[in-house]
Image (cartoon, rainbow, N blue to C red; front, side, top):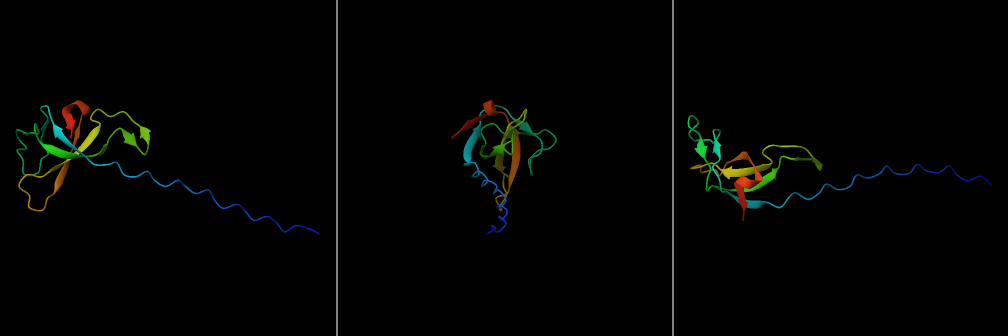
Length: 100
């Protein structure tokens, strides 16, 4: 008596993606001068000292792999005087921020 041919094994399933990082509030504690603030002073820049934002992600983590990044923390700040609540992203160093 012959055995029926074996069925191919199912393809391996990819592990589920990691949960999104928990959003952390952060405050800028040193002088950070940026020129891309919407509705800001693009000629002289805007100093973000004392501004509070939300840590959006890490620029030194690419799909779970460490990469070198000079400004490793991406922080989302609210656009000043914007009724729609839009945000803009700023890359900062760890020592420029105080997490709350």
